[in-house]
Image (tube, rainbow, N blue to C red; front, side, top):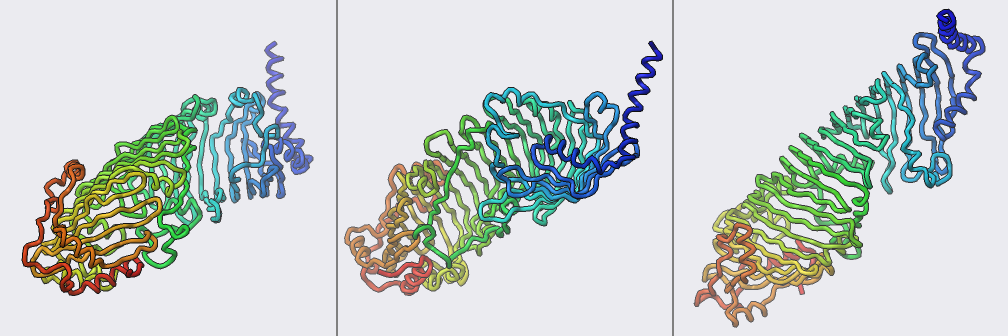
Length: 602
C-alpha cells in the first residue's frame, strides 16, 4: 500500500512536468486560439493575443502574453483594455486541487477605457442580471491567492462629464497582495491625474466578507492628489435594504475647485476668480439667479454616518479652517450638523439638510457667523478691501423645488446682520464705480483721503414666499446715516428699493432718496426729489423706529447694543429744506451708481 501511494505521488508530480515538456516541444503559441477562447468565456468579452505567447521555465513556471486586447461587449464603442505585457506565475500543486494560487502577476504598458453609464448589457445576455438570480449572485467563487501583484505604466481613461474630454489616470506603479483569500487586501500606488501627482495606500480587511454582503473595513486609507490629502477609516456594509457607509476622515488640506476640475477633465479656475462686469449680465433669459437643477434621488439608495475634519478647505471662495463636518444619511434625507469652521478670523457654525424623499427636493440651511473680519474676507475673495469692520450674521432659509431658481422663488427664512465700528475705503469704491469717491468724501469723510469712519451697519431681511423685505437696513458714519427700505422678489428678481441718506449735521442737505427699480439683471437708478419733499413734510427724514420683531432678531444675534439700532431723532430745526441745494458730489454719486449697477436714470 505504501508503495502504491508513493507511486501515485510521483505520478502526480510528473504529470505537470510531462505536460510542460509537451508544450515545449510543440510550442505554446500554437495554443493561442484555445487560450483566447477560455479567456473570452471567463471575461464575457472578446479576447485577442496580437503579440507573442510564451512560457517561462523558471520555478515556479509562468506564462507571458504580449499585445493582449480585451474587446468591447455589444453596445460598447471601444475595447476595454489594451495590455502591452502580461506575466503570470502560478503555483503548480494548488492547481492540482483546483485552487488558483498566483505567485506573481505583472502587467505593464496598458490602456484601459472605463465605460460610462450602461455597458450595453440587457437582462438575459451574458453578464446581465436575470430574474431570480439574486441569491445565486451571493454565492461568490473562491478568491485566488495573489502573493505579488505589480502594475506599471497603466493609463485609465475615466468616464467623461457631458461636453468635457475624458480625464486620464496614470498608474505609474501599483503593488498589491492578497496572500490569504480570507484575509486582507493591501494596495500601494502612485501616479498622475491630468499631470498632477497622486498616491494611495489602503488595506481592506476582508474582500471575501464584502463580496458575501458582509461588513468590511478600509484601514488604513490614505490618499494624496495635487496637494490635497485624505486619510482615515471607512466601513462599508452592503447588506440590508441599502448599503451603509461609516467612518471618520481627516485632511490637512483639500482644494475642492482643483479636484473637481481634474475629475471633470477641465482646467481649474483660480480661487476668487468670479467675473465682475462684462459678459451676459442677464444670464438665463435676462435673469441672474441660475436655473441649476437640484437632484437628490441618490440619497434614497444609501445610508451613511461620516465625520470629516479638514485643517484647510479651499472652496474657490474664502478658505475654511479647522472644519468639522458630521454627515448622516438615511431614508433619503441628509443632515450635516453641527458644522463648525474658522472663516476670515471669525467662526462659522450651522446646519444643512437635504430631503430627497419628498416629491420635490427640499433644502434647509442655517448659518451663523461671528466676528468675521470683512477686510480679510474680501482679500480671501481676491478683492481689494473696502470695509474694515467685524461682521456678525444669522441666516435661516428653507425652500423646495427642482432647481435653484424654483427653490428661491418660494423660499422662507430671514437674514440678520450687524457690522461693528470700523472704516470704509472711499478710494476703493471709486475704482468700482466712477464718481462714488467724490460723493463719499463729501458725505462721509472727516478729511481722510483713503478711509472714512464707519460707526455701524445693521440689516434684517425676512423672506416670505420668495420675497425679501428690507425691514431694517441702516449704515451710519460720524456724519451721516443711510437707511434702506423696500423689497426684492427672488422669483421675478424685481427690485423695489429706496435708499435715504441723511446728514447728522445741520449744514448739509443730503436727504435725497435714491430709488432702485427694475430687475437684478437690469436695475434702474434715480434720485427722487419728490420723495424727499414728502418725507420732509411728514417729518420722516431720519425719524426711524424698529418693529419689535426686528429688535428680537438682533437680540438673538447679540447685537442689541449696536448704535445703528438706536432710533434717529428728527432733523434739527434750521437745517436745509429737503428741496434745497443738493450735496456736492450727488450727481457724481448718481453716475457712479449707474456705472455700478448698469442701469439708467429715469
